[in-house]
Amino acid sequence: MNSKLRTNCIDIGYIIPRDNNFDLIRLFAAFQVVFLHSKGHLHIKNDYLDLFSGYFFGFFPGVPIFFIISGFLIYASLDKNKNNIKQYMKNRILRIYPALWVCIAICASLLLLADNNNEIFSSGYFYLWLIGQGSFFQFYTPDILRFWGVGTPNGSLWTITIELQFYLLLPVLYMLLNRFKSGLWIFSILFGGSIIVNWILGGMVNTNNLYVKLSAMTIFPYLYYFLIGVVLYRNWQKIQQYFLGKFFFWFVGYLMFSLFFSNRLGFDTSSHWVHTPINIVSDMILAGVVLSTAFTNIKLSHKILKGYDISYGMYIYHMLVVNVLVQYDYVGNLFFLILSWIITIILALLSWVFIEKPILKLKYI
Image (cartoon, one colour):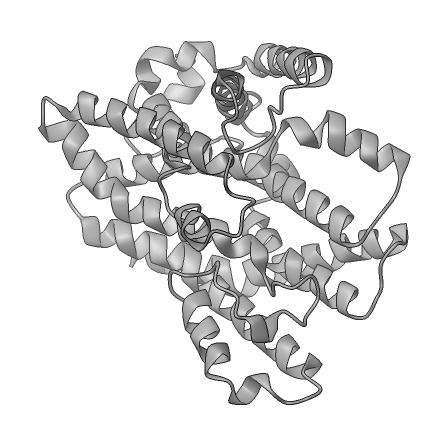
């Protein structure tokens, strides 16, 4: 291991360098989601943007990247706090909820302003939606709110539901892997079972079956993404040599793989649904790209972002901006697309400076 990396390790499992590019990767993943959502919902037709989204952003799906990183870093966080589960849960709550609650308050205010008939304020479903958004059911949208924007006030928040389930499941998984000889078998069953559930639901998710839709909001079809990150962390000391400084090789290899199987043979390698074994191989290589990016030119993230971790803010706010533009018919023009990005970045910066960063200081109190 590079001596510079060895002497600059953060106290997370005692093996992960403090200097890394995870913030930059999360920002990329967030912008990938922002780009595709804003371009699609604002009905932007542009040959260059179509080419970019198809041949670049299409190969690097933001949601799987988020899940893989979570598996790696959140397991590391639990490994650090294995004797203090209360601290682990406190850290997770502080990272997710304060900024989320402010976003929900702004979203609710926008809905009330757009409600010309003054119906939603007196509806019980509105308050049920507020409770769901602020707790564990971010995917829930009652019909009374379908009038606004694209029909879901903040549809991107469904992934928070999945993340929260992973946070709750992880201590149990950690115990199984570290205290029982059968832990590896249990892990393998969970990994394989998740792929099977993902494959089954992937072929049914576009139906109107309520049970299918609810099943798609559970951890089970996405668990294998997190577990890829977990495996990489648990074996990091043995395998890190294949990732440290190896971004170019993983990136080029992944692009060649994606171009061949996706563009030439027609496989959908960018979906978070497993359609063929090619999707699983693609996810494995993508994880390699993520880890090699994190540990190549390790000071790049700090040089670019200067400590501003705005990825979460961009993710939770971008659909509010898009919905406002759609609500008032500001669509079909490239100017509105760029405007949506600018406003989203400003909101994310405000969220980081005034909410997230101050709140995160409480993690160490």
